[in-house]
Length: 187
Image 1 (spheres, one colour):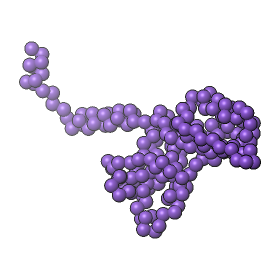
Image 2 (cartoon, helix red, strand yellow):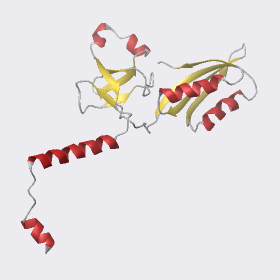
Image 3 (spheres, helix red, strand yellow):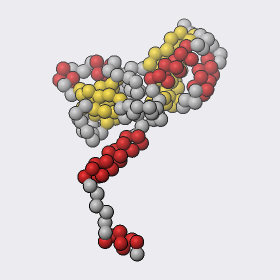
């Protein structure tokens, strides 16, 4: 009987109640979103993807490039492909920034890649992968080669949350014996 009564006598909401309900729902949806999203200025509901040439991470300065038929490609501002654009292509650049939700740390992971240069020795790769294991970071790819002069170049692709975590990783890797230099790949 209660269901029939509520159906016949629906509750009347005032304009203020409707507006406050909408505000509460929008706050809840913002809290559910993680801070790893991208905000493209002046554009809403467009396909956005990360370029593989420079692998941008939260904390990097980024810019969008309007592609033909694939939405907006997000690049780091120091990406070789962005720097070498022609004047006609530069007109297709659009401002973009990382979305940040105050007080929330992003749980989303992004692909990153670094090159490690070191004097080759037994156990070098073990020491490097141990740092990743201790930090609970998944390695996606690893390619090593050694020059005739005995300098090993190790290219490692992995998943990471942001540039701060990347900086901590690089500092730990620099502490490994025989590491000469570490650089992030830039396209």
